[in-house]
Image 1: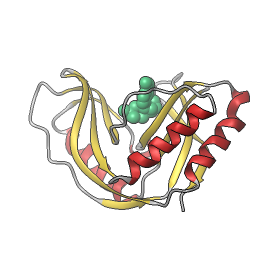
Image 2: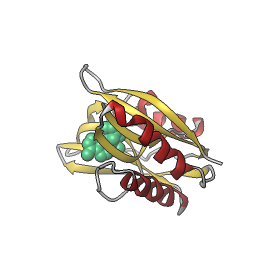
Image 3: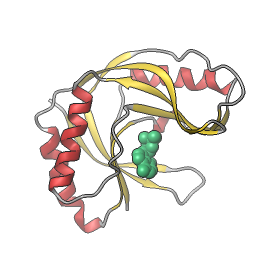
Image 4: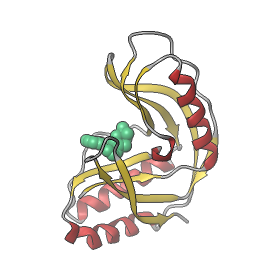
Length: 174
Ligand code: 2AM
């Protein structure tokens, strides 16, 4: 199965992200991410054998147990990739706590022998894919703050028209 580890977001952030996404609809063409799939990825593992799930859960449990819930604030819009086919996202600021949690999650994965995408963490919530940014001016994003207390192991099923993310296990902070 295809797996990734992410933070689910508090209601205040989800509402503001939905507002930003709605404002973008008027100015940017591309594929919108449905609000029920908004999350902040901490580590992307890709394909993992189902038989390795218990070891993975144990590693994540260990990484999360010493972390407290994290105050998060939404920031500016940013993008990855090409101007005419970009991943468009809104930044998430969790101070030192968020990179520290991600670093501990990644270290625990490494110790347990799980490979993951080693790109440096850029904390963000993806709002659009294949976004055409060549056209107009982007709207100002809606801002909000709130506390996130859950790290979730998700499976990602890409076989249908839209990705389906399924929470497999939740790890509560604090
Ligand atoms: P994103 O964080 O920019 O949205 C499931 O695919 C999630 O893992 C998405 O949130 C995706 O991008 C993130 N992700 C991180 N690295 C990835 C990679 N190398 N391939 C696919 N998805 C990746």
